[in-house]
Amino acid sequence: MIIVEKIAKNFGEVVAVQDVGFTAEDGMITTLLGANGSGKSTTLRTVAALLKPDQGQVTVDGICVQKDPLKAQERLGIFPDQFGLYTRLTAREHLEYYAQIHGLTGTALKHAIDEVVSLLHMEDILDRRTEGFSQGQRMKVALARAIVHKPQNIVLDEPTRGLDVMSIRMLRQILLELKSAGHCVLLSSHVMAEVEILSDHVVMIAGGVVCADGTPAELVEAAKQPNLEEAFVALTSAHERNAA
Image (cartoon, rainbow, N blue to C red):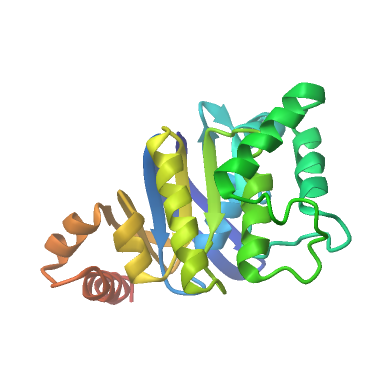
C-alpha cells in the first residue's frame, strides 16, 4: 500500500505539486490522471524517493519514504517514463544487475530471473543485446527489471507511451495479473481508454492538486457526463474556475 499525504514540491518559482494526497491499495490499480504538466510525474518520483517533497510525506507499506528511502525502495518496482536500457548488455545481464542491486544472489537470483522471464515471455530475447530492440521488447526488459525482486508495489510513469497496440495489450494483461496477485499498482496516464479499462481507482490531478478521485464510474456519475473523458474535462475545468 502506498499512502501520499498532502505533498508539495516546487522547482524554484515553478509549483509542480501543491497539495496531493491519495491511497493506492494492494490488489488494485490506481491511476493518476491529468494533462501534461499537471504534476503526475513529480508525484510518482516523490513516491519513488527520487525527489524529496517540500512538505507532506509518502509511506510505502508503512515505511516513510523521506525517513528511510532505501528501505522503502526495497518494496517498490519502478517502471520509468524512459526505459534507459544499457544497449551493450543483454536482457539477462540487465536482470542479473538489477536483481543483485536488490540483494539477490545464487539460486535465489536464478529463480527470480526464470520466473520473470516466464511471466513476460522473454525467452527469445533473453540473451540478446538490447541494442536494436523494438519498443515492445524494450518495455519487457524495463518491466522485468522493475519486478525481478518481487516488490509489493509497482509504480509506472505513463507506461504505454510509444508502444504499439500489441505491446499495450501485453502490458495491460501483465498489470492485471499483478493486481490479481495482490500487488499495489500505481501508474500515471492521460489516455482515457487505458484508464477506464485498467483502473480501480482514479486520482484526477490538475495544476498540482487532486481535483477528484474515485472509480471511473463514480467520477462519471459525479460529473454527470456520459464517459470518463467528458468527466475529466468537466471536473478539471470546474477546479480551474474555482481556483481562478
